[in-house]
Length: 141
Image (cartoon, rainbow, N blue to C red):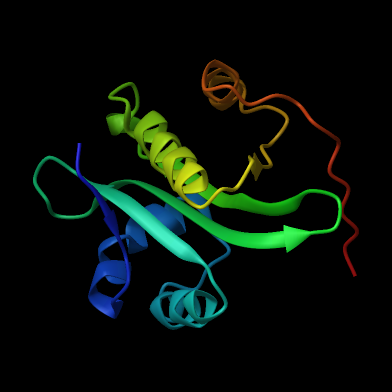
């Protein structure tokens, strides 16, 4: 399974359908520009191409940052696999890639948030060694 890093506008465009399927609030016309801005702030987008190599079958977006509570961490913003590609190990491979990056970077923890009703994803996270560490609260302003 070949994991690639989306660094260029073209590589980000290759991931566009996966990103907008997962995050329907995104404007497809501005997506590449937004990801490029986020890359300048440390965001990384990785993907696995589909079998036809025509678009991303699965994506993960993450960033490395430091907090007083945790020290340096990797935070996974986005993890998505198209329904027709689920069960092929893509999400697990992306999680393993990120875990290996953490290990190489001497980062002790990887964090992510997941929706309450995403039980298949929760099973994957638990099987991959993640644990429920806290409740995440948000306030809309």
